[in-house]
Length: 350
Ligand SMILES: [Zn+2]
Ligand SMILES: [Zn+2]
Image 1 (cartoon, rainbow, N blue to C red):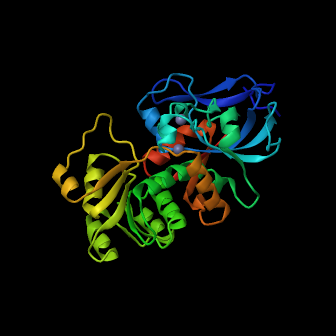
Image 2: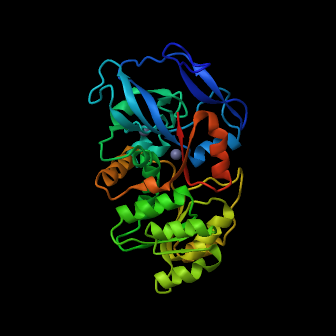
Image 3: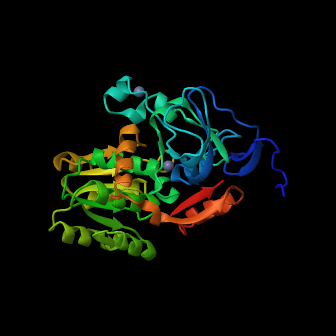
């Protein structure tokens, strides 16, 4: 029997921003891939903190389809596409740097003007998408049978995390602390353990359930914020951490991160702060203690390649972070689960 309200042709359903934080399901007309493009039907799309941030900021024009952590199945390829055929299971990222501008050449690929463009149309919270030519060429990968959807869907966020780890300058055997044991915090833990030989990693998180999960995923300690400095001192022989990753965001979290580092350490900002929020800390401490404050925004093709290698080799498998899956029509439920901190990664199944 046919679904009521379902288009009879090749049309598809998409979850659109209606106004501000509200969303609705819209029926869209069929898509046809142009030259170099691919038509992909979605299997899962991860709900990312950025999606929630955009909805809360009411920054998206009506009709926008969010979602960018995409695993799907190739339905049709446009003329000239090489390396993919209908039926391939694929993971694809939404941003691709140009590789040639001043930003790209300087290593700031995520600041490239072209990088801002969304190469997935309309967006991942949709039954179908067109993957633009640039993304088909450099940001789409066929998933081998050995990797599940739940693992592959973490490629884009893992690439973002890896960029921050690289920017931290952390060395083999270095001690890291992650502020926040949510989905991104725990993904930091897994990527650090996979990418940095002999990494020591502590997680600071108020919720006991998440602290326990951090330990089971290999954290060297996991503590509530109140006892975090003791744990860091224990882990580092009193020195302090080499790198601290802020996945919580805001000035309070930044101050806490600065307290956990040794002299000469690096704090990596990896989360949105409140709109217009200012930070307050003693500038001379930054100078005299040679501390570095670096920000890391999104991830480029280099990071995707490296994260993909870690997944293919089996060193990185974040599938355990998936704690709920909902259909497009239950998107509101997904938002509530994440906002109430009852779920880590939620997958939307169009
Ligand atoms: Zn994301
Ligand atoms: Zn560029």
